[in-house]
Image (tube, rainbow, N blue to C red):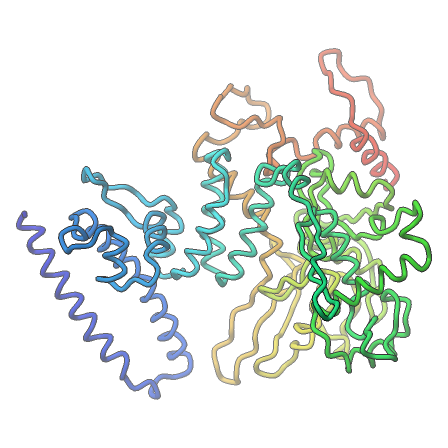
Amino acid sequence: MSDESATLQPRAVELVADLHRIVDELQTVDLFSCTDAELTEVAADTERAIARLTVAGDRQIDQVEARDLPRKTGCRTLMQFMTHRLRVSNPVRRRKQMDATATRTSLGGEVLPPEHPCLAEAFAAGAVGSAHVQAALDVLDQIPHAVAHDVKVAAERQMAEIAADHTPADITQLGARLLAHLDPDGTLADVTDQKRRRNLWIGRQRADGTAKISGTLTPELAARLSMMFAVWGKPGLNNPDDPNSPSGPAGTTDPDALATAADRDSRTPAQMNHDALDAALAAGFADGTLGTSHRGLPVQLIIKADLADLIRGTGLATTATGTLLPIPDLIAMAGDIQPWLAIFKNHTAVPLYFGRGKRLATREQRLVSFARPDGEVCSAPGCDQPATHVELHHAHKDWAKGGSTDINDLAPACPRHNRMVGDQPGQYTTRVVRDGPDEGRCLWRLNAEPGAPPNPEHLNRRPDIPRRFAEHLNTVREQIHGPPPRFGDQARPNPSRPNASRADAVGYGDRGRRLELAYRELVHPRTPPEHLTTQPLTPVEAALARILTDHR
């Protein structure tokens, strides 16, 4: 052993002994002398230190394995050593965490970098904890090996960014959204596999006559059921336990009677879903809808989709209940819908029309609110309540204080968060961003006690997942392949760079250039040069081009 390593080992022992002395003091130190702000910072820094100590422990376990200490101490495996000697509660997950975020030493002495460097950096800095890392790794592990390297690198950066700002439960939810965005066309779940796995079972009746239902639903059926539950399963509606409960779908009943019934409704959400399905099926059988060729529920779905995704025939659409639908499924199930065209200021959530209205938002305002880039969920940070469960909140200035019902001043808010807006500590203050990339979106600030430092403002970043991933992916591709050729430059063939003329799973393609050219041709017909030839428009492109022409 060299002099340097001999000196390092005693220093490590000294540092751990010092650490225990500091922890002993920290466990008994007087906290009453800290101000509220200081105590908050002490608690936050302690949690950061816990995460950083885990990183230090991972480095030590790596050296334990490199020196073959498990065998020397009588353990058969490193897992057994970690369980019994180090008292690690879940050595398998800890080892997985080490492989992803720790600098490892191979059997030959080679230093191996972490598999996920961005996540490792956030972990070492204490910005994320073990639970955050594990949640992010569970998402990253679901990316198939066939996905391109640059897409994986960008996804890792995206997940590190999400992990630093969200809870483990949120990371799982947002990660699922990222996985859906990475593969909207079925690489992760092939359409054939979806159809093969579809099933719905009603189990054997129990002694009391009840039965359990189970199954695997296709995206189309999940979207239909979600919408049906939202329309028929509101609190107070179709309640078999209440003889005075209004029946039928929402919107056809007396609002006052429904509100009164909702106040005495004690059903759980699952029970309301059950009663909604029962009432809808009963109504369908009663009027003959389920026994005729009526088009039915698909045309009642409220769905928004990006124009470029419709042109490419790939990507994901979002229903008002928050269900994600692949674009091909949307086209197949919505052939007879009435289209609405919503136009927004460049890359913002600011609509270019819909002016001053009444105190309550109109149907058109609710539709354009849902069509916003961030309109599919409640605007409160971390909330995932879908558009069918939200109200339009006077975000910039409350109606009682002189606020207006302009669409630019409204924001989606679920009933719980809408009721939490106010001036008192523990309530929220909201405002609408008026400039910058987040223009038109609603900021939420939790009110602090008088004299306390103000809390930061936050946005709900869930709808930003696709856009932020595209930015990460563009950065990664420029770092790997170099910047793309500028307009007018002679493009050099690069076999390692993705083909920009082909729309891939994450939207890398012409971004609607074909539709733009088609629109110009319809408005200003011209004779193209002889050397310029274009492929004929698809039916979807031709229809969309004519819609744009009609809205000139």
